[in-house]
Length: 285
Image (cartoon, rainbow, N blue to C red; front, side, top):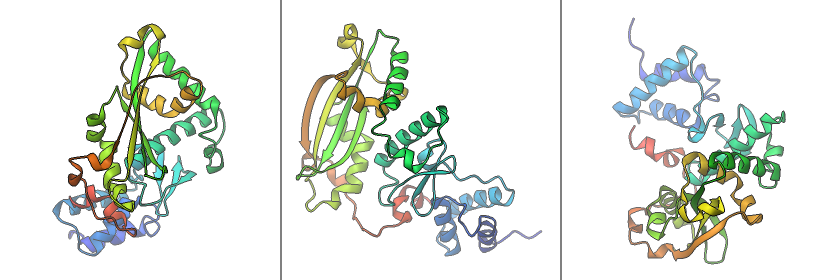
């Protein structure tokens, strides 16, 4: 039997996924690039894998950002186990900021599900106001610490010169300015957002280092683990509001001061599409 051409494979993929509606945004873009002859050898290999999965009925839409149960459609709507719970703008949805938001949303949806409540976009609106959810995550964190340990983390907030908050992210441990600037979250933010302000370098970064845990262990706090960071992502605001965090350090800096900033500069296009959103894939295929 003769090998199918690239166009024939594209037709099979489109036909078997309801005109591409069942594909992830990345796989739809991959298929469009294949139809236009834009794929290199590596990209064609990825297409072959997609074709095999679609043809044999094993294709499943990949989790958005790799966060379990969370998917996104072509219009930016976010789903938890196929239930619509949010909407992310395409210029933002592939950022690490969006990934952090998605992880917190996933945790909230799992919490609602454990309570017998079906997650929905209406329910997700209350994620920042649900103290029961925050308390539940605090108790999970306390169980990991076993009552005789303390962990440290650093909360970083980027603001424009007029005070508008752009992003908040957390790093494990007591991070200094250099550690913040070397973090993936900082670099990702600079790449995606610095060109959106009137003048590059206008972002002010504020960093607060916190310790949570046993009072007797505050002096020997260790950097929070990955699981602990996920829990802190869900309840740090609650911990601050209830004076349960000990602030150990504070500093701020201007992104203009970043000597390595030239390494991150990119041209920003308000109309950029998935080829730019997923450049880490497109450059390879």
